[in-house]
Image (tube, rainbow, N blue to C red; front, side):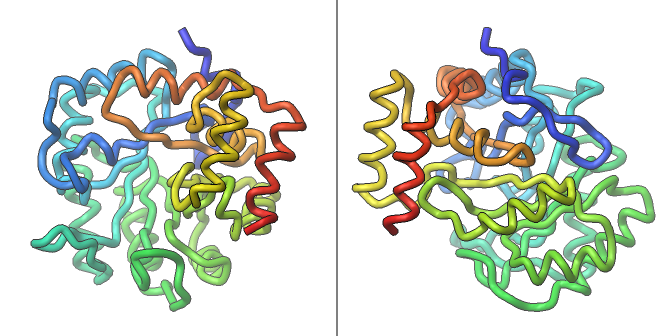
Length: 290
């Protein structure tokens, strides 16, 4: 069995979590909408992740919507004592599958209650506020009102810890004046490294950074470089991308998602892949050339 503990652990709020977790978005149907083609397989993936030692699951009630959280509950409830479930709020799904802002106090409050109900929890371990000024990436704008709403829900005992997603450094600074922030979730990978300085700053403050799309937005040439390194190391491109992230900074937590047990095992095996310096240098040249 893969030893994901080799990748180490990091403090996420009040919990120590292993750095290789699981992202539940792919448990929903095509386009992150509707039920999966094989619900039993989705349940099997979740149970296999827990059996492999995963103790950090990233989800959202707008995956499906509602379906992904309901599958997590069916597969894992009652939950292991050491399992940390992180959710996102701040968006909703439109009738045609669009991702729309859901930023009002009432919408954010309802979203927390929806997560609690569908996951069958009394308190959410971590709730990330997903900023929706631009669905495609971080965009400036005050988030004081939204973070204040989450801080009130935290005071009520519905949330243990608060995180942010799709945010700028200025928004993180604004939020930290209101409450403690335990994690930041942005797009970051070998080819897209705009958050390099942010990651280092957060690491110094003990705040987790959770990148999504580890192989997202690559050009054919960039993908070819990753493929070459993977071939040299007898690994998959995804394993190389995940291993690079694990070696990038100790505060990086990974949440690769899949609906396949076989792919889950492949992803988790990245914990045992150590990239030699020559490979790291080859991969670092991807961002330097872009």
